Length: 264
View 1 (cartoon, one colour):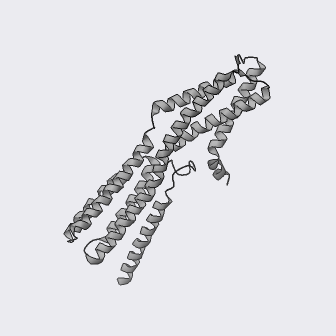
View 2: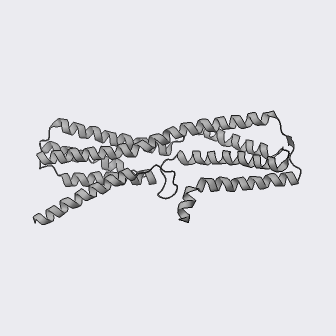
View 3: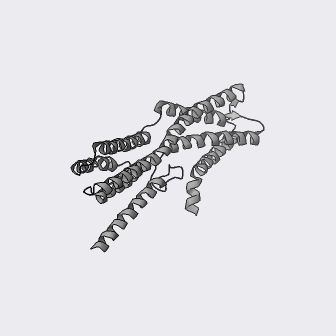
């Protein structure tokens, strides 16, 4: 339970810890009378500009994150469609090896899950190995229009895989991210060296603003990579639909094996 809570509130705890440290620094600077900046109207302008920049980055990064949420569902749906079409083809053209095709689809799902979590490239190889089954369909006299549909679905799998890989590895406007981090750091430094009266109320205000800035920067870092290693964070895009599809394929494979064993 503690591990689950720590994953759920990980960003909150990190931001809170950083805020406590900054509050301590603020208190030390006040005690040493090192607050040499007088609070003025420009402070509000600086804070507003900082919120604008990080808000722009957050909205753009969330767009990629929301797209990433759709990809597992589209990937699982494509696998399901390919499996159902293959079942129908096997019913009419029994020479087509449906068991090996099911196993390959399952391998694609497992490889995709591993690739997005661990930055490997096995799924791409498994997807391209579907060409062997398309050749087998031609040998089994499957009509060309069915094979063309399978190839289109194969291309959709590759497209989804490439899109995930791109989102995982590329940072949205890296220079803008550096700008956001820089102005947040400068803003916090400005607040630390600004004399605010009454002191304790001002320190609380500095702590709140710093907490918001730090939390948003941490959130940007997390959602810019929608898929992390299993269990690292609860903000990952879920892959439960892929797991469910793999489970259904496992059940079909087990059922076929059982029937084959009874037939013997």
